[in-house]
Amino acid sequence: MRIRKAATSDVPLIGDLIRELAAYERAAEMATATTEQLHESFFGVEPRAFCDLVENDEGTVVGMVVWFVNYSTWTGSHGVYLEDIYVRPEYRGRGYGRALFVHLAKECVAKGYPRLQWWVLDWNTPSIEFYRSLGSEALDEWTVFRLSGHELKELASSG
Image (tube, rainbow, N blue to C red; front, side):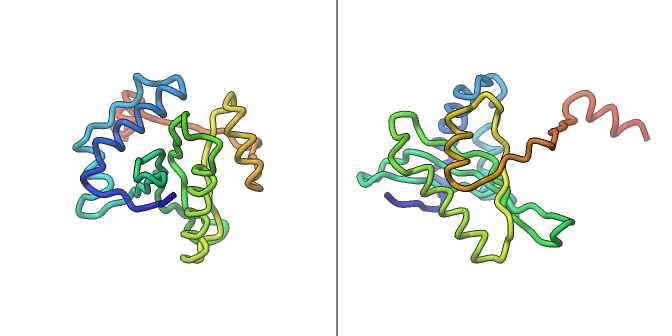
């Protein structure tokens, strides 16, 4: 297998992988990112998100990881936030997901980042078990909040 940085020519494929992941997560209708948005996000003037692809021995892309640099005020340092990891179902259980985590762990260590962090849906037992097998810990005491759409615009215009 080989892990490589995504290229601009990969953007349509990345879009396909994102939509497959959204369907798996029972939220296909929420995956609305356009090819243009993905291109700008990963390859624009100042990319703030990164995508790496994993290929099998035949050179077929079988999965991806999308990540960005975050910051912790508690540690006073940056870290990696894993936005999405996805391996196509027919390639799971062959070490591709683990390889993507090793890849990101190496990125953290090389840059002196003390954390690699992500979310997982609470019903996604296979992924939770996989993450635990890597030595990660669940932060069950935290609740994720989101402000978006109309409510975000309303708050922005309130003051």
